[in-house]
Amino acid sequence: MKRMRLRSFMFKQSSLLSVAVALCLSACFENELAASTSEISPFAEIPLEGDSDNLWRESHHPFIGATPVDVDGDDQLEIFVGGGEGHSDRLFFYRQGRLINQIEGTGLSSVRATYGANSIDFDDDGDTDLILARSNGVFWYENNAGRFTQHQILPMPDKTSAFSVALSDIDKDGDLDIYVSMFVDFANFRSVTFNDPSHARQNRMLRNDGDNRFVDVTQESGTAGLQNSFLASFVDLDEDGWQDLVVAQNTGQVEVFRNSGNGRFEKKDFATGWGFWMSLTTGDFDRDGDLDLFFSNSGNSIPHFFLEFLSDATDEQPRNYEWTLMRNDGNFQFTNVTQAVGLNGQGFGWGGVFEDLTLDGRLELLVAQNYIKWPLHRAFPLKARTLVQSGDGFRHSPELGLENPYFGQVPLVLDINQDGRPDVFWVNMEGFNRAFLNTSDNHFLTLAFADNLASLGARATLIMADGSQSYLREVQNSGGMSADQWTGLVFGLGDSTSVQRVLIEWLDGTTQTLDNPAIDRTIYIDKP
Image 1 (tube, rainbow, N blue to C red):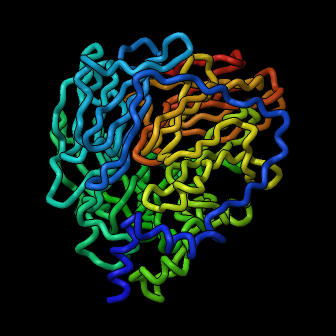
Image 2 (cartoon, rainbow, N blue to C red; image 1 turned 120 degrees about the vertical axis):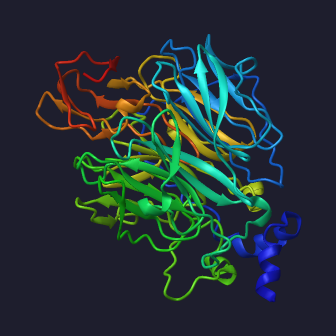
């Protein structure tokens, strides 16, 4: 009875504050060790006009979907940001040094909660469409010259919410299939619940059988998942030309499924431990030519003994509350290198994204922070982690100028002002959003892929003038949390002033080579 009272008590913020202070004062602050980054150029914040404060309504989950999208086909990316329940969505256009919300008249906005967002040319007509996971279902918003028409793909079952959508052609039949990450609705959600099947919601794999006619193949594909899931991503982990599936679960272990190429997925061993896996991003952080996996977690913001007291996990379910970086060693063998690279001991994290923000040839890691239901984060907010690679690990770098002491959900990475550099848009689940332009003087090369089926899974590397190889990048459809990232692949060159060759491999095995490309610009890539 005592455990059940505390479980309910945790979500009553006015009552929780006194308990939280006593439990958490010594455990909710992060190590602020900064990298020596005097050479880093700080990002420059730009204003947003027509934004609105994403005030959380406690009757619904606080999350909001977001994605870059080229609404009008001019290669200038707009930014779609969903609204929570009762709040309108936004669509930001870049105009004369600022972002301006101009969603009116597009047919996109809704006051239903928008939990997840993706952009892609879904019907292959040359316009970029949107796939949105709202509180009342999953919808395809068909783009017709900047005006959108809504089509429902999946209604929501009772007591269930769709949190995010991942897209891939899982069977290579030429159309887009959909994987929906499902979650129990807010009214029935209980935290720290690992072993109650009635509390979990199975994800849905929807196979496209042509003309956007979808068949639920969740059971036959073997991809239902075991817990409520925040998000999933398709990524080719074993370099066999088929995109595999990674699923980030709220209270469970991360699940990894190998795409067998016959419509079925094989679950692989992937020992993260049982935790709160709220974010998923991929990146070749060690430059060895394959994609590693990062997952955020509750970290040290909430005392672990408090979580253990509330939990229904068993002794046979080893808990892991640390952020986790799994190094890809090939053939679905992964090594947990979190502590080795200095990512342990972090505070509560939401969406994380790998990107070479400093353009020095190494990937940085951005992670949104602050738990909206944890009162201490209102009194002592975390600033979001802007982690650069320094030596053999990652170190927080406030010199980037990207700290975000709000209730962040995910960073979007995109080229806002069309200069080829990766800019950052912080999506905040409570408070106003924020946008920053990249001011780095380092050299770079950006490959901009079309936002369509043909580009999904395309991979690129650079061969430098001295014969060395860059990190690997892959075009993916979802990443971070409830978000879709830019289809541009950025390669930082540091002081290097030339590139010998660009190597591109498409998912169908087609290869493409660009010799001696010009640098410090964006090259638009079409499938040959």
